[in-house]
Image (spheres, rainbow, N blue to C red):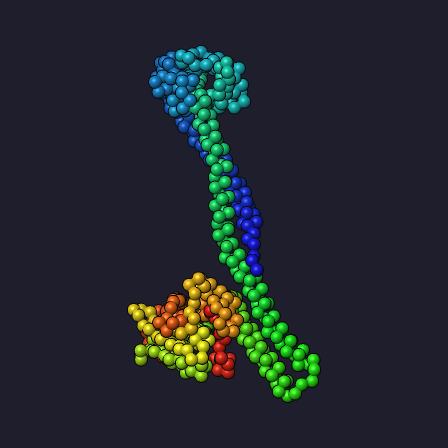
Length: 441
């Protein structure tokens, strides 16, 4: 069974994230525009204040050309720093009595209404439209001995700067949000990939488990129906019960293996790690399987090979590998268990004289319910269990060909320092029955 990928959740999450960031972007743009506007206004006011101070000290500057780099007018350059400062002098009644050359007219009515509404305040700043086109000017008013001084600077430069900033924000906004949406979508899809993979594995596991459970149940039902269909002698009933017993044993082993994998999938707290001697475990495992059929030998180099892992798990892993090798080696075949220390690691190696593992099947070797060959009557869960143990204990797999003619299965772990070792005893469930040969191969 195949589970289809549904990216709708990732798209929804990406859209929500983009919407939230769009609101944040709009707020940031608003704040930035306010800060830039306040900064430009502050710069202009400071410049006007300095100009009024200069005119107070030297009234002759009032009739000089408007100050600005190169004497340029605001129409020559929209840069706020280049806009010239115009000056006006007014009497106490607000009538303009003098102004710098080229300055736009300052209506007396505007001046009087400003003083009336804001009061005769020294240092008052305001904006007003001047000239035939009502160009916006920032004006600053200061008292003088004979009345008032007014300094003004065109706001065209400030408006141009702010327009450029807004245009850049308008262009950058959609691009930034599109990039954020795509990035969020990619991250969401990658984050959902393990979830989708787990979901797909669960669906496949459920389908495969249903199929595997159906077979022994169908055999048990058929044997019972045949036995009850007509009277038969004791040997006939015995044969039927024996076949039912075999299928029941297979069904029991399948259920136990499925429960083991289910516990691993739910990530329970693992058993405590202890020093495990692979050499002792290999010898015990060889003794346990010598009665199965193939000739089982163990080569441990005569020295302890310690790893840190749950003893029960390593015992089950060794049982899976050796049982796998015995099933495929068959009666009269050979199985060899070796323990090899190399550098800082130690390996448990199991070889057999069976048909081996085809190269094309090795990538799926640890898939649940997968069998590389049709030899043996396993359920296809043994190597899946072994792989869970290896990954949980920090081991590394190596799959290859043995010089015995069959498969070579090797697992290596980091070597640990010697300390008190608890002997590894076969679990109760495995002392009374042979391990399952489901083992994926």
